[in-house]
Structure formats: structure tokens, C-alpha cells
Image: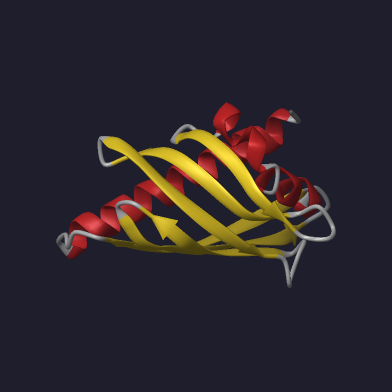
Length: 134
């Protein structure tokens, strides 16, 4: 099942079909193995549309997928990691780390709430997509 989770999170072109906040995705660059290394996203955030580009690191794939933001309109940092840990025969624990920094300072509790919402939504959407078998 970790392989299935990894496959879903690296199928960037299909994010708009299952990731509720993602409106569009464009793969800008791929490595020699065909994996997306630079991906531009347009997403709903804070009641508006935001655009950002992430650079992906496959050094620990497929157990781990990491990224750093290379461009963003309202964020200066949107760096994260998915870690896929097998649990039992057919289950996977997904650990999601995210560091988000906005161009405009906001109170810490608002930032933590936003990060929690982003991570919670992403994990629910990922679980639903993986379990649907789509």
C-alpha cells in the first residue's frame, strides 16, 4: 500500500480531480526517469486563489517524497514531506510534514490553524483517493 500512496501523490496531473483545494497543475520539468521535478499549482487558499511552484526530491522514494517551494505569490515557503510507513499487510501510515510561510505576517495561531487545515484536507483527500482505487 505505500507504493499506492506514493503513486497517487506523484500523479500530479490528476490532483485537481481529488485534491479539493487544487484548481490546476502543470508539470514544468521532469528528470531522466520521467518524474516531475518542478510542478506549478493554482489552489484555493485563504478565500482567494494562489499560485506556487514546488521542486520535488526523489532521493528517498518511494518511502518518502519531499519538496521545497521555488516560487509563490502569497507564500515564501511551502516545504514539505510525505513519509509512507507500512502498517500490517495492507495499510499505510502517512506522515505529512509542512512548513508554510506567508508574505504577509499573520498571528501564530492563525498560521497554525491554516497549516492544520491544509494538512488535514490533504490527508483526507489522499486517503479517499487511495481507498477508491482510482
